[in-house]
Every structure is written in C-alpha cells, then in structure tokens.
Length: 116
Image 1 (tube, rainbow, N blue to C red):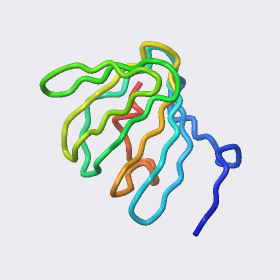
Image 2 (cartoon, rainbow, N blue to C red; image 1 turned 180 degrees about the vertical axis):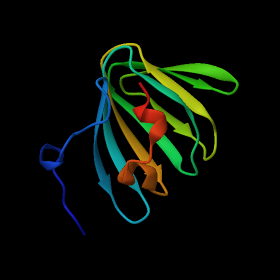
Image 3 (cartoon, rainbow, N blue to C red; image 1 turned 60 degrees about the horizontal axis):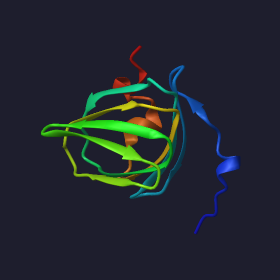
Image 4 (tube, helix red, strand yellow; image 1 turned 90 degrees about the vertical axis):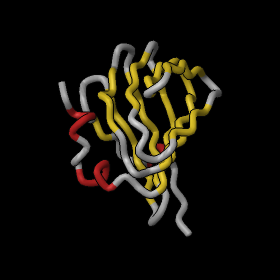
C-alpha cells in the first residue's frame, strides 16, 4: 500500500500549455492534467482503457463518430484503441485514469503530446 499527496507529486511541464502529475501502480495510472485554454492534444490511441474526469474547465474531445464536450463533474470512458483528440476550451484540470499504465508517459515516449 502507498499513500500519496498531490502537493508532493512533481509537476511535469510537457509543453507550454500542458503539464501533469502522475501516480502509477503496476496496473493502473492516475494523472492530474493541467491544460491552458487552446491546448490541443493530437489524435492518438493506446491500449489502455481511459476515464477522463473534468475537475475544472471545459474540453472538447473528438472521437471517430462524434465530438463530445466535457464540463466540470463529467466523466468520459474511452475504450482501448479508440482514436481520440482533445482541445481545452477553457483552462482545464482533468483527472485521467489508465489501465494498463501508460508506459509511454513514464518514459517520455508520448510524442503526440510533445508536438508544437
């Protein structure tokens, strides 16, 4: 068992508009993601099932068949291997849960996020 405090987790500045804090176990990862208004996340997919919970702000996600706006208090479940992208319509804080863990996020191989 491990106990964490978000205030003790270092914040990684991924781009000038996106930063995050990560907590990872063997099979599940929790990420606090901070997106400035206008931040866009390029289309991507991964083997992980993902839950995105908006703590503050507003995001629009583009899925293969539709666009979804997510506001504070809303959760979107994204199945494994479903291509998706996002844009922050306001300054946004979201909590992402991934299973299995995103090894690309732990190793810096998440190039789709780091594009300018």
